[in-house]
Image (cartoon, rainbow, N blue to C red):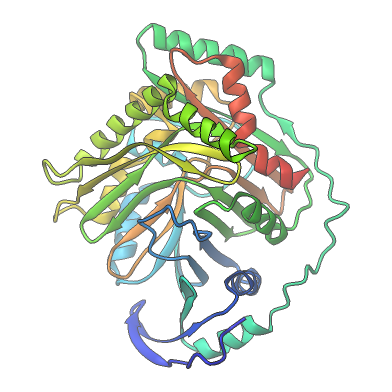
Length: 443
């Protein structure tokens, strides 16, 4: 697994408010190391594992993977979350990993969330890890008080499954019946016709009660199936996020902000020529282009609140990116952060992400609460990290399974943008396409 000819490099640097040692090595088998590191980390109470899955098309990626283990200090919020996060960051420069739930919208706007919640998470959670494992291509660096001991523990970790998953049976049910979903799409279209909004992201939940799963096994299979560049495994207080997201919410590098909303989805073709035709069909789709450009305009407006005047630009419009099971239409918007805007405020001004709300944003969120039947919670929120230098990178939590160990409740949600020319049956089929990987690993 590890290239034994690679020298051990024990050094020290100031991170996390204290002098931490770190060691770096080159590894020969990246997949093997990732699996061993994840299994080793999973026994800790707090874990965040972020995996780019060697997705070369993401030219903005800083790491192949990051693994944060253990909590020196942590923050769980229910009110005044963004101010508490700013205070938490300002205490000292450090690596911080965490999540923001969609329902932070209630702190940003005069909104509320009263729908059913089967998972039960705080509005926000962040922690300063005891150990950070950073993977860049095939180079691994471990930051910890005793990094060599961690290297040895990871190398000793057995990757053979310690559990039997052959008899796992889940009764997955939709929270919204198909006929009700189709009727709701028509109601949303009527709002669009009446001028209440232009576009709304409408989501539905699939769930299983009395579910007995093995989160690591399920995440590994989902991650191997989807190979998504913003995959995440998060363990928090007997609750798990198993995420295979293809979407970046917001990244900060120096003073540069980058957002990459997805709007537009089509299945992959079964042959090279068929796949090319599907790509072209998506690129030339009038409906998908209309959805995409509306969200691009919304993101530009969100970034304008934190960015230098005249710095916002669309780097790529209607880019078509291939993933394991689908093609997505992705646009890239960038800007320059104002010197006097705190990184947390840059996130707050753009949250929740426009690709998961609609336009206008506040009206869309009001109607989302009216027509959806499940509290979104972490779904359509974000998971990511802050570096000691104040940079950050956060995904959009989609294509994700959430699991509460104590209540044995399992949930995943899928959705899509409803516009004037949406066809209800086609919107439902798109939901099933997005749910395909989760369904496959669960059933």
